[in-house]
Each structure stands twice: as C-alpha cells, then as structure tokens.
Length: 351
Image (cartoon, rainbow, N blue to C red; front, top):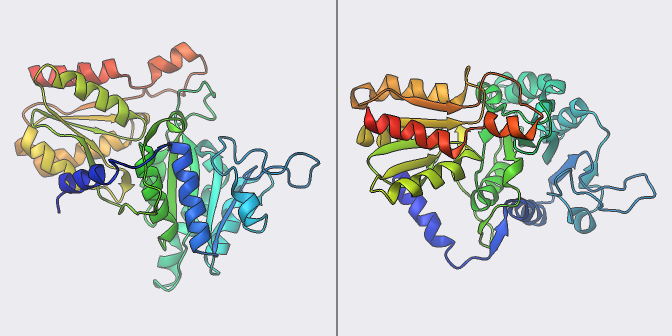
C-alpha cells in the first residue's frame, strides 16, 4: 500500500469518531496502554502533583496537563512524581526499561535535553548495540518543543535535528490528535528508545480520534493534501500552516502535495521522493534553525535521489539562525508563517 493509500485509509477510519484535543488524545493513549500492560509507568516532574506536600493530589498532570487523571486510577507507584533533575529522570527510565518495565518519561521542555544528554545518546541509544542485540530499552521520552507561547529562548527550541542524528533513537513528531494517539501507542510498544515531541501550540487543536486503541507505524508519512503542481513537506506545528496554504492555492487551481513525515527517524524517504518526482518542485517547512536542520537533510535527499526530476531550486522555510525571541511580536516573525510558505511556493511555481 502506498503512503497516499495509507493516509486515505486513516481519514476514512475517523469519519464518525469523537472529536478530541491533541492533549486528550495523548492522555487516552497513555491510559489505554497502562490498562493493557502493567509494566507501563509514567515518571516526570509534576506528572501527578501533590506528592509529599499538603497540596491537592493530581493537581497538575505535567506543565501542560497531559497526564492529569492518570494517578488516581493507577496510583503513585506507576505515575511517579520526580525531583527536578532531568538526568535522574532519564537515567532511571533507561534502567527501568532494561529491567522489564516500559517507562514513559516526561521532560517538561525538550530544551532541557542538555542536562540529560549523556543518558540519552551515550547510554539508552546504544544499549542494544553494546550488548549484541540482546538488550531491549523500551522507553519513551515525551517532551514539548517549539515557539509560539512566549516562553523564552530556554523553553522554545526545535531540537529534533539533534536527536534525529543519533543512531538507536526513534523520533516522533505528531501534528494532530489522531496521529498523536496512534503514534504514542506505537512508541510505548516499541522495544527501542523513542523521543516523542509534542509542539506546545498543538495541545488544544482538535480532530476526530477513535475511542478504541490503534497504532500508526513509524516511517510512514501522511499525505494531508494531494496535488501534482508542487510538494510541500512540513513538520509538527508547521503542517497545519502548510495545509492552510495548500487550501488557499487550491482555490486558484494550484494543487499541492502536503506531506507530514510524522516520524523523522525513521524518515519516509520513499513518499517524499515519489511526490517530488511527480511535481518537480519542493518546499520544506521546518521550525528548526536552518543549519543541519531536517529541511537541509530532506533537501539533500531530494537532490541526491531525484535531481533529474527537479524543475526549480528547492526552497527551505525555516526559523532564522538565532535564539527564539521572548517578545511575542518578534517570536511570530521568527516562526515560519503561512505568508512565508505561500511566498516560497509561488516563487517556485514561477521559476
């Protein structure tokens, strides 16, 4: 089945499903898998709230409320509030994964990866290889990414290219609630460490999400829009912006493929190349800084494997190579906008 066929199947399956937010979809995935598998545990700062204090139990559910309601059902032995020490959270999760549990560890902000980077790239990512394939490390690291909430430069980065570079890690970036649930269930069931990146601005976005459990395979992109005039590859919160541009262009008779890779390691190169070979034009939208970004990586893949099909230079729409501004006005200028995406598309179509 082609990627386009898979995307169509998923759309059909959600036609009569209830509408849920991105936050609710992830919470539901965690709840369903914890009910099905007693080895699944959750750990992180304020994932339940109130531990060791006179405050209200289950007061928080993480900084964005994603795990709220899980502690009353599963107890503090499975929904574990941790000290503010990312190195201990990820180190404990890696050890737990090697001894039979399936931990889902939360980093409040992925920017804090610097505090626990050794535990991720030098330990968890390498256990399977260091022990000749005999070691399993079924752990999920949930973390928020992205700008748009004026959270400052230390809480707003898109650092997915950093972990996509590391062999042994799988990196997931859902752009909608339906994908978030299916990809989270796949992540928990995977026997390798998975980095699950949730864009802050997506938590309140909604779409139809089935009540029953379902999985989405890693490495299979989704075609959000289909057309042969131009290919737009967008990541995470940039997908809804690319969809909006494609819808506007469609009213003018311009048909665009909008591809959401959903996972960047593994990356569905086949789907991207299939589209580029048909359209001959490629725009890549990635909120990360431009140097060594996924936009740069995807562009290199297209040039290496589909150069003869290209009818115009590849365009990358990214953030500038600066820290994320705190100012709300500057932050909006920093992030790739619908206007910038549309401008890049129109320039390629005129080329």
